Image (cartoon, rainbow, N blue to C red; front, top):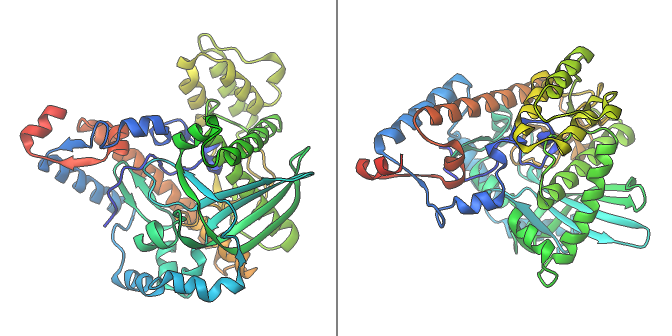
Amino acid sequence: MGTRVRDSRTVDRDAHPDTTFTLSSVGPGMSNDAQAEAGTAEGQGPVEISDDLARHLENKREELFEKFEIRDEFPAEVLEEAKELTGDVQADIDDEIDERTDLRDLTTWTTDPIDAQDFDDALSIEERDDEYVLWVHIADVTHYVNPETAMWDEAVERSNTVYLPGYTIHMLPPILAESVCSLVPDEERFAHTVEMHLDKEHLGYENIEIYKSVIESDERLTYSQAENRLDDPDAPLHEENKLVHELADRMHEQRKEDGSLVLNPSRDRAHTIIEECMLKANKAVTHTLMWERGVEAMYRVHPQPSPDEWSEALREIQDLDGVSIPGDSWDDPRKAVNATLEEAPGRQLDKIQWAVMKVMPRAKYMNDPFGGHHALNFEIYGHFTSPIRRLSDLINHWIVYQNDVPENLIELCDRASDKQKDAEQCEREYKQFLQEVGLDPMAVNNRGIEVVDESEAEKTL
């Protein structure tokens, strides 16, 4: 069955690639830690509902799962295989440590939503005389999941983790997603590390190394904790978070200057760190695959709207009360939107974002990066940093590791694109249903649900 959770992350997280232009970056799924903490059981407590309403929610989920062909339960053989392959993780690490880069002594930490279940990326950073060295460590899912396993076939079937308010359907068996592959603190874990040496002046890649490693995270931070560490000079990881934020902030500003669309201009420092570091790592991997290795991969391609569609969006934005598009930015619609969002009244931000979203084509996975990623303004781009919850990243991990491409790569690209669309539509319809029965999707998402007696439930609705 799916996992009942309080998880403030929807299909994005992520501070990851497409969150710069999808609605998940501005909607309930991106509630910050302050909101999440206020909505935990320790604060307001879970949303209380009756047995009858709980059955209605379960029936609705089952209806949606059937409609979108989403598997809620794992086949017994998949669960058994996952259990067998993860029987003694530490012994497995001890046996393989000599074959990997040992990074256990490198200061490393994760930053995630307060109620995240799986931690699939961690950071390390150093400043040297003429460069920054940024390590992005990603859970090495392919150590356990490969084309010879039933778990691989099941991951292809599911294609992504589905995040509904209060309910998660994992792409991988929970023992992998929540435990063995999760980069929890004070536990040795297999990782796939992207080590980037960045020029201090222009932040370009001086060198990129991608390799299998063993890490041990020093601490698991929430976004609000990361914010606090940035402000407290005496706190652990203060210097590391300060340094990585200075780097991430520069990368963010550079990206905007280059024409990357940023629909969420008020993102806090902790989210900026994660988003920019993941973008940098994803870009490094796909550039390496394309230019150095010359192999196909699962690239993320985002077509651009037509000139007429962009004109339509800009006219709609210009007509909003109190909003004015700077005259010197009209030639580049992405820069025009960025500049407008930074100056527009807060009450108009949603309308500006929606005007852009209406004309934006869907991003899709392709085996050829032709066309690039319009919203990010990247010539080549793909996903690598979330193999626990996205098929595209799992496939790209395998390609990097094997330097070979699955024969059915085009079919895998199409399936990942289709199932992502299904997951997003399923989430929208479930949120709409929650509203129809009198529940706040954000509250359910952040606080979870508790079934209580009918009389008690009525008091909270």
